[in-house]
Length: 221
Image (cartoon, rainbow, N blue to C red):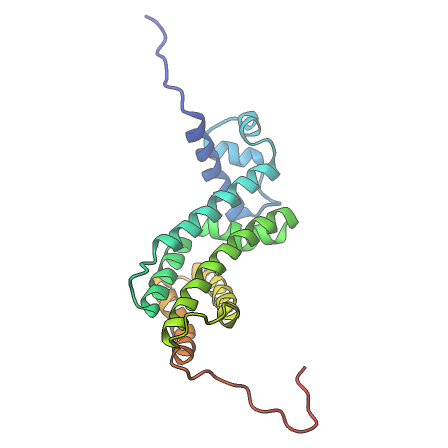
């Protein structure tokens, strides 16, 4: 009898299998502690094959960052229906964000913790992803603000800082939610809405908070 031939796995599928293993190891052990041996073993391949496909530990880590960043951005965009009111759009976008980070805690650890602390090339990859999400949130808030104020020419700079603050708070809350047993993605999104929308809602209604006037002889830092 002839030898049984096994079906060869396509390169793209094998590579995703390696990235899955790498994200898990990097996310749980950290970039410095992770070893290519561990990643190869978890992926069910030889270490030379990992190097053949992805060249080096640095290239493998970069590939993980790019894949997970793309997946996160796509999840947030897909979660928002633009025909809904402004608060519902923000709610659905936040829901998609927290649901994705909850389903993929290792990937979020790679993006939020590991990539930012292990060198400029890695941090730059995450910064590009963050800029895309901030730009998307800026447009959501801007559209709502223009509608609320009946001013189609309201400058983007009026809401750009709000989008930065909102994304930064959501990132920190996602890290906390993933590390806190019992906190669901829906609860995290609701917390974020309660934190953000009270202020945004007043802003949309033309009731922005203003700092107190400076006393004579004092100067803002």
